[in-house]
Image (cartoon, rainbow, N blue to C red):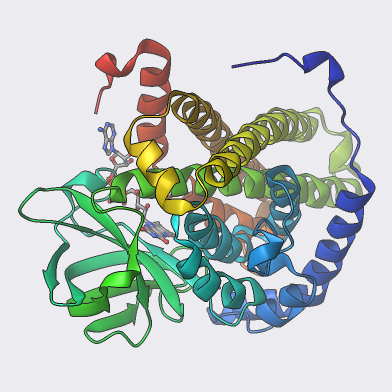
Length: 421
Ligand SMILES: Cc1cc2nc3c(=O)[nH]c(=O)nc-3n(C[C@H](O)[C@H](O)[C@H](O)COP(=O)(O)OP(=O)(O)OC[C@H]3O[C@@H](n4cnc5c(N)ncnc54)[C@H](O)[C@@H]3O)c2cc1C
């Protein structure tokens, strides 16, 4: 880790950041009532795409060249933090569509693929999904059984993925499949309507009730050869790079959740009286409030630090792409094991894992404390704190279950030869 500029730490928002966050705040408020109704009805909130596309949020960190706003990763994290205050259900839609959706294409797709897929996604005309997990391959994606074969001008995918966020309606998804002859995984861009692609909604979830998760069936699904993403055999590296962005967005969203929990609890504890005084006067209630305030601070700064590392990685990759004049040269350079890229990626990877592990654990505990502060008033899904409690449960599981992240963090410290998985 390099802290060469540590003495120049600046905690002020830039004018551009503040103005953009104001617009995000407005969009969040405009969909709030419908988000609650949709949550209770377990339906997609159909106001989200129109409200957020108006302010450019659907392509926030995507380069202007491909229809996005071209904002940096820290500003994106700040926007996700604000959205997180509305709930992890709303925030998950953005994490999937942007962090493990568009940013994967921005990082790895050819110029032609980026021009084809990113502008409609950034506008919100085509929503994105990320299909990695399978029923028998969760924490260990390398053990996936979805396969691909080459047939003439096509790749033919065979297998099943599950829990795929936005999967019931996404126009485009990245999907990961193995070459049975080499055991190596490749990444593909799969469009809705591809022959042999079928999606089915997964029901009876515990929380995240405005997110639509799908089982995705590749029944000899045929896609054109030009839809290979990156180079053949790079699939796991692509998927793991996507998870850096996914984890960062979970961490940022978790900070927002905790801010909302604290705001809700502060207001409630001041207004609710028991034993002749407001709950806010009771020392044991104050312990909940103090712990939440500490959790917000620790999670927030880990997240911002991770976002800065991710931005540095992004800038290096963009510079390398320019020097190599095009994507192919960059991919070849990676194949040769570029040391600077490896170091920057390892740092971004580690810091995102630390931030996600910490912030998701803390936010689940904050949400649970909030329900406790509200008592029975917090035990109905109509209460924001109840929804945070149900939704944060998933954040310690997805984008790398927290036990697996602990092992990853430990091997980052001890060295790969001590990897425990
Ligand atoms: C709401 C939700 C949304 C999701 N969205 C997506 C999506 O959009 N796209 C996608 O591809 N996937 C998605 N997933 C899948 C998610 O990434 C996986 O659930 C996650 O990777 C864990 O895999 P698993 O559920 O199969 O659990 P398992 O891998 O079976 O793990 C079960 C438990 O064992 C622990 N464990 C596993 N291996 C080890 C080990 N070596 N040492 C110690 N403990 C271990 C885990 O930490 C966990 O606690 C989603 C999941 C959920 C719940």
